[in-house]
Amino acid sequence: MTIGILFFIMSILSLPFTLYGGRFIDRNGPKKAIVISNASLSGILIMLFFTVLYNSNLYYMYFILICSEPFMNIIGSADNVIVSQYSSSSQRTAAFSIVRIFQNAGFSLGPAIGGFVALSSYSYVFLITAVSSFIELIIYIIYLEETKITDVGKNGNVQAKFYAAFRNRNFFMISMLISLFFIIMGQWGTALTLFWRGYDSMTTIQVGLLYSVNGIVVTLGQIPTNRLIAGLSDIGRINLGYLLYLFSFSILPFFTGFPFLVVDTIIITLGENVITPSINSVISRASPPEARGQYFTSFQALTGLVAPSAPVLGTFLLTVYSSNMGMMWYPLTIIGTIFFIAFIPIWKNIRLYED
Image 1: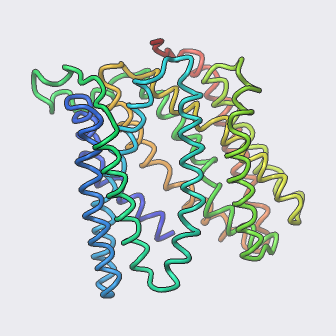
Image 2 (image 1 turned 120 degrees about the horizontal axis):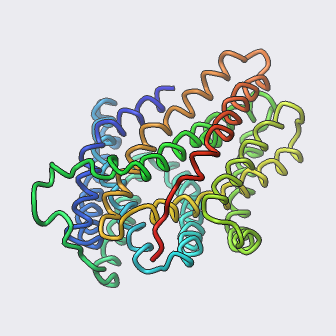
């Protein structure tokens, strides 16, 4: 729960910087935003390296982590703007899918490399990350061409338009619906891992294998999944992916054992394959082309406020139902079903841009 609270504080305190970063992307171009943010993040990671190496105060480490949050958000949003600018509406989900495959490969390799490096010292994990971030910075500088820089925000007071994305009712509703879905989908991670250990008595190796199944299904299944549901709209894909998550969680109390969990993990990952690229595509198409930086960072800021509540809620329910952990999925299924049914009429009124 402490980690969840920390991430919530990081989201709150980074909110104004992240939102301003979106304005910076639109006014100066995503490449410049990435270069400045990546250089800053590399410096912060070096600070974390020395903090851990010399066993500095834990709250000092928290402060440095909080400082890193806006830069990570800006880099992610700038990347999404670049993908959006280099793809048409019809290509966007496929483009974000390709990015996601490579991100998942990095996500899989990262813990493995980090675990190996941590055998010497945990501080070297941050040093390796800083070096990797610096290499990424060099690649951006050399190979990335600056995409179109818009004139939005160059005239007038930036502060007057600071919350423009949140004033866009269509965009705000999309962001809120997806953010609330994250309360359920966010059980994949901390809460589910603890559940596997406590309810199914999975060993550390077995938990690692289940996450390996997730990585394999993402890498090998993303493109086939896209082809299978090619006829669905982006909003239809978001709802289908959410239902796969909800179904996979709802059946957890009724079956146990490693073979079942492998199948269940495959279903969860299929839901992930369906929904994740579609979310980025929908946010891109709900944003005015000249203000995508601000809209992507606004979406990240909003989901960043809601998403940390998922592990907090999950771990709370695990505590409440500690004598029978399977019971935790009943209230989550009820809440998730209410979300899905209540959101149907709202989705029908959503408007998306075509470009």
